Length: 131
Image (cartoon, rainbow, N blue to C red):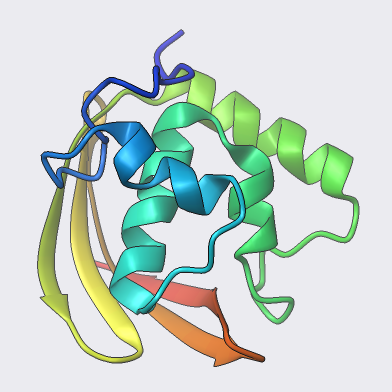
């Protein structure tokens, strides 16, 4: 097993150089991300820390992977998190609605341009184009 719950005093996985409790954990506990970049970084941290419900809650309902059966979806995400060892996040580019990033894992590099939208003051992940 790789990914695990993160101690609040550990460095945040997003690479901010802040403690997890001062960075992405607040979003995982319900604070709204201020912009698409913050949402993307907090979702990356959620994958690292197995916060599957946060990933689900921040995925837009038009996303092809959206599943109304949250229990099944959460289990699938958890299985992915348990078998993926994320090592680093690199932001390549960021605009108002998109973030291009590289997520480094022991298995390889995920290079994606993610699209986001804001609905009623909350940011959601729409979809991503993988390079």
